[in-house]
Image (cartoon, rainbow, N blue to C red; front, side, top):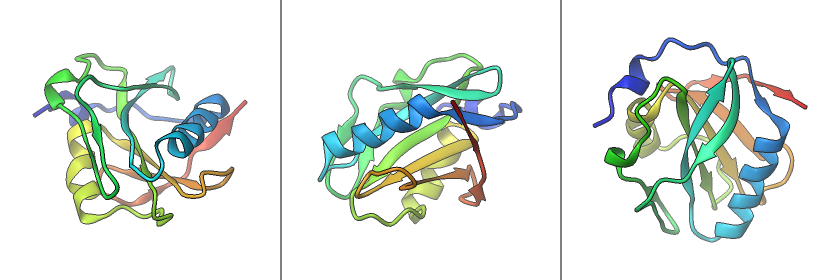
Length: 132
């Protein structure tokens, strides 16, 4: 289990517009399967996604190997897709979130602008500014 991400105290101020566009494209490309990746930040802005070796995407779930997570302080959370279009965390998501960080993006079908939301590690909605 990766514990450093859950204790990280960084404040995320926003997410890069290019990252949102990439996540939406990843949702389209992996549909009807889910994708999952680890979000990274720089200067309080979510700006990258890492796809970890061994990640598996299925129609109703995606999983990653925690042992493959980067061990640095720039890991901010996760991003994954919901091919069913429901942009709310499932119970499995809420159990997964604290293991990967504090900020979590869910991308939903049909993967168009506005088909995403951010949640905190406890599954509560969290507003993020989109930064050009």
